[in-house]
Image 1 (cartoon, rainbow, N blue to C red):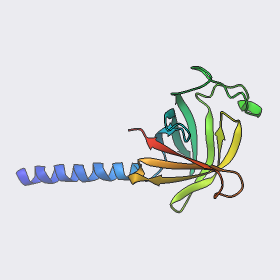
Image 2: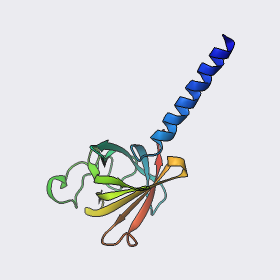
Image 3: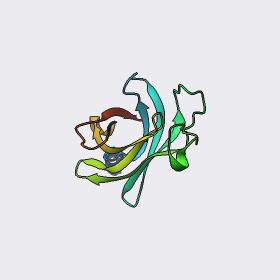
Image 4: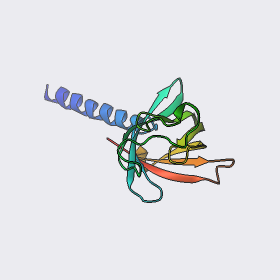
Amino acid sequence: MKRLSQFAIAACLLLSSAAVWAANDTPVGTWRQIDDVTGKPKSIIQITEDNGQLQGKVQQILISDDGPNPVCKKCDGDRKDQPIQGMTIMWGVSKDGDVWDGGKILDPKSGTVYKVKLTLSDGGQKLDVHGYVGFALLGRSQIWERVQ
């Protein structure tokens, strides 16, 4: 009986660690956006998957030069003058080998939409978010940290 209990505990630990590993093998989850200029946390982004495509939505603004409820002043179309909190800022991203790309990301501060490429690192705890126009070699990156 004692052996069976030990086996059950070992199996539960193995399965729970496999679930954590699998969850960290994808950008799906909650992320702390770190500003690439200041190095400070800027917002909390929730990345979800729908039909194999990722999208990211701003859940919370942590730092803003435009007060506690900033709007997208420089955005075009439906996003113009809309609250940034709750806004979908990344869409259409699909898995391509070890990276996710093919989608777009919006910089609400400038209103610019970039192509985006996502790469996980540090065992899935960090996400390199690379926005670019034209070639992926050009552009800028931010490192986002997974929120547990």
